[in-house]
Image 1 (cartoon, rainbow over the protein chains, first blue to last red):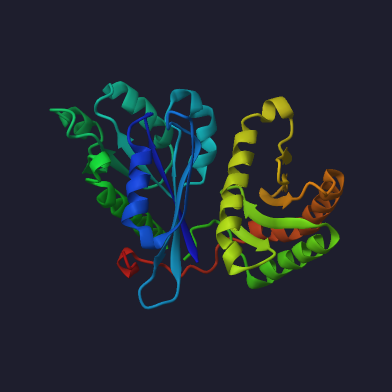
Image 2: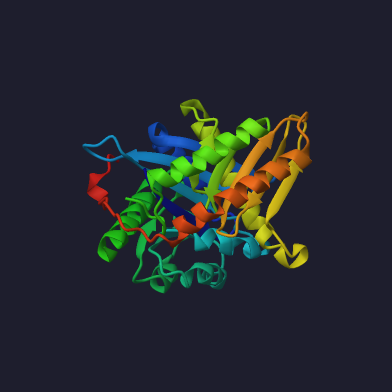
Length: 172
Length: 151
């Protein structure tokens, strides 16, 4: 069984865990496991993981997908490099309700990794203008989302999965 | 397709499983898993389909613990092993030089010293296998394209 490791990264409370919760629900039949190590406030500490296995057409094989979301708070930055270095691809969850420079600072943590990246601008229903966020990440696949309503969650996952597989294919 | 940087053959898995079987015969462990630093499950014992999810979770969490310990390396000088004790059992993790680890769960009636002795011995015995795996680049790549997925 092949395996892909995807990281959801972004500021604390950007909606990373919400994405994983919806993915677990959307792909319930493919879910292997889901666990979330969190504080009493629901903030991710170290582990927020969804394990899935997607059947490959015409075979009995499955592609295993491990999705991690990172603890978003700045204080956890020292524990993130281990997670990042093992990733096959990244979803960066933008929180447009937070300052642009803070989002950029969080993005810089994954920028150096030469792996596929997809941008999800979350909480689009909470802000009037997202143009500055769109322009700063132009050149990368960008999905607009309201993760707490499930909007854009599946599209984001499909996009990163496709980019990871395409990137591997192009390196063959 | 495997998106891992190394390749494991069936012979490698068989070699590892032999050592794990010997380890289980020597000391009463509830479960032993072998994984890599990225939390990828290599194999586990005792084997059973119903144990797969337990082994998978145990593997990911063990790798995460080692990942966290990595950040304490300047304080500890070495992150090569980890032990924690719970009410129902204890866990000991041994990290090899090749960044594969052996993680075991055992009951309260089993002495930690015995576990460490046999797990460390198993790790030493497995090191040549781990080195061989690390040195192998992925020679076989049966690519999976996105449209091949039932999603």
